[in-house]
Length: 174
Image (spheres, one colour):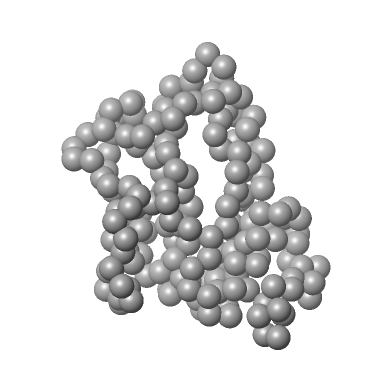
């Protein structure tokens, strides 16, 4: 019965929906907190609609209106509950976007550079892994294998995985 109550947000949602945003993504982030509190070791919450080959600015503005309240409320709640040092939150996509805007006001796929935001889990903030040139279209230095930033922190001090990380890209996690 404990598992069933873990998946029930009716008690919490009335007071939390304004902070998380009354969206599927907001509810999913609040559920992720509940699952972490119950001891679930890995939770994935997805948000679609960042593949903006056209109307990039309109698409991203709408997506970020959903992301921002939910993600910030989740991070705040993890910190307030004393969980942020042992829970890592990763925000990433499967591919980067070109620095140039195309002829449909969009941004196309760009595999040589993309953003991954990590929070908590004892990681050091403000770290940059890999680099592009000043305008962004060319990688500088050696390539960084997909998933390396997350794997690096999962295998760092105090993080001992039960088994070796699989040899596959971060795009296949989940």
